[in-house]
Image: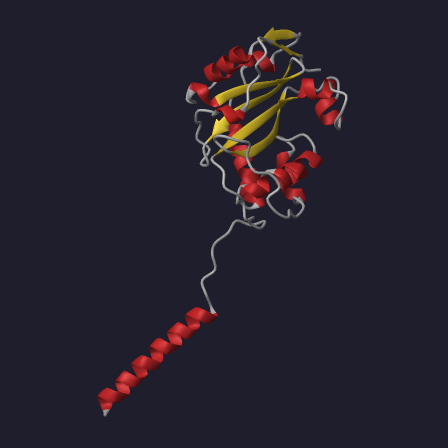
Length: 225
């Protein structure tokens, strides 16, 4: 009789544990700011826009923080883009809540305007599968790991170089990176962007053809204002 009672209590205890497990499932740990569903992609492109080219163009928001005379702004972070090996990466992967003021305050040292920060989260961050906090932490980590070549930080006059020459300068300034992790793009014969290929854990990797590259023999590099 005692044995049967013990068995009954044991069975009852197991049932209660099972019920508790259904009623109170373990929550998955997420970064603050809300995670997104994301989309499949192969690697990241850290994309740096050459501000003098953007500021000289006929369109776009010419915010004085980026384009003002005397600011001497060169490369600025355009974004950290999910990219595919053989094609352009995914974009706009779901609804995006506005980026908080606290994150914007951190990011203005990297991305020059609030509107671009909001755009990059909506267009590219939502495809990363990361929370907004973690995505922008990755943007900062990726940029902080990179050294801009001295030729671009001290430029005072217009010059002309090929994509290969620009990429070699980035490789020389960042000897721990694989030499093929860099790409230079152009628009209308002028330097537009430097792109750095990074794995999902932000390690430098060789770029694929989908990262893009200027095919002109040389491109004009406008000096910072």
